[in-house]
Image (cartoon, rainbow, N blue to C red; front, side, top):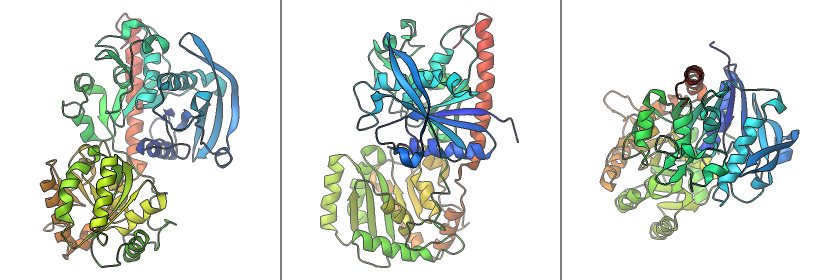
Length: 490
């Protein structure tokens, strides 16, 4: 086993405390895997209004802290929980987080600055200082700036900054720089200025010791104009410190052999239970119990997730003998479109607008094929969960989808799904057609076995993260040796 590290994973949302998207799953699962490798892992997040204290067994460990913002001091407290196996969790308590919704408030810059300041100020209080702080998305992007902005600053913890979705950058007015306690000299193209605004995302990219994206392909894509969100030049400039690591999935949660939400349990060696789950799904959503291929889709209903090309493909697809079950919420346009299609094809299509955890498990276990026609997909968890449950992914070849799904070749018997490249309805229809053709062939059982045999657990990804943490520490030490010798610190 390699060097044992002290790691603080800092995120704006973490399962089981708070969740709006995949970041929370990553932030709740990766620490468990790192702890299993022998590392001392801790987690930090804000304490939101809906954190359920009794279940998570919170206890006060610091009640009299204050952190600066916009020239004044803001009172915070720290609570602790052991809800994540193997990892202590610290929750920053502030009245700034006692409101409905995690994001989208006019004072978000203040809210998450106070959170980050509290994290950096709590180490003496908790009696523990990390070797490396793993920051995630814009809400934690100032931590690397505070640690690395000044020449000759203390060595302190190293930083890794992970980009989960480059499209959400945390853009704020110029005056925010002074409010968060940073000098105006950073408002430059080489600093954190971004087209006349302050970009928190850019701050993390520029100042972190190492930068990662949530898949190798996405790490390459964001260095191009198509996917770079106007930060491609900055990211390309840090290419030597930029890596891509595919997220894992929590096999304790996503396991058809032990999933209590399923009608029948099954595994790769005994897949017969999948038929019972298909019938249970059909009954639950009101579709006829027929022996036809069932497609599942669990997604935000937005153009980024490929709903625009799915719209163009559905008339042709629904002409085939199949059923489609959709779960998600998003743009009203797609809500209305899908509702109208259900009225037109009531025996072929079922849509649930919203999120339902039990139904999600039922779709993964009861569907035969799983649709992810995303315009871009930094990593994606749905395709990996689907394969774990023997549902074959039909995906666009982008980001983490390209890194985890391999086109099935019936001649060699290799592959675990179906991919298409062009972002248009015809390409999607063709990939669905290959899936349907294979479903009715002798190759289907082999394809399902391949998908279920794929290893998407956190074990390998956690090892890769540990290697990147060590690189961040080495780069951090080099950076500060350079600063003491008179070279720029960043």
